[in-house]
Length: 249
View 1 (cartoon, rainbow, N blue to C red):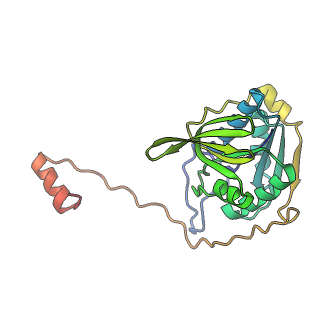
View 2: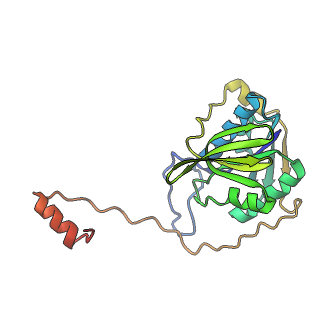
View 3: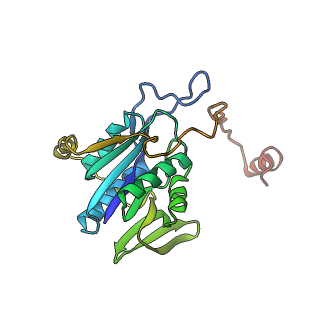
């Protein structure tokens, strides 16, 4: 079974995000970028499926600028077999990415698509669901456990009330949650090997997909700074302030 894993290049989660002075967006110049953490979990799960003998090939895909090759090389070093970069300098939205992935799925014919449940830059949590809808495939979102066997995949989902297990017929789309696994660190030998693994570059136009943004960002602002707390002398004062000032009781 071939597994397709989409990955996204985002601002590293350890970096303190700053808004541009003109309010047009987030500052990305001279900022450390890395693979979206949820996509990293998806890559790890695909590698584990291959190590278990369930998957035969892992193809990683990214939609973005030339610099996204670094993200793909990281995935290759983790254990993916080959990579595809859909190169575009346009800021892509979930629907456009889903359409690009649909075109690649039709070309590559994978048995399973596994990706992060959301990207930490826009927090949309939409691409996996949109892709499943476009393909007409079953979907298992927020996966904390994935077991594939006999042409089916059992996905344990994290929901508000606890856990839910669904069984999907392959091919299917699965989105990885935080507790699915702990991604491995790429070893130095694997990083060197990744440089020789195939990385194909295509354009959205070559796939017949229009990635022109449908949304326009008017302004980006930082959240209001949190006000300092105060100490109260007794419970009666606390209750009074909660009732008359905060108006929460």
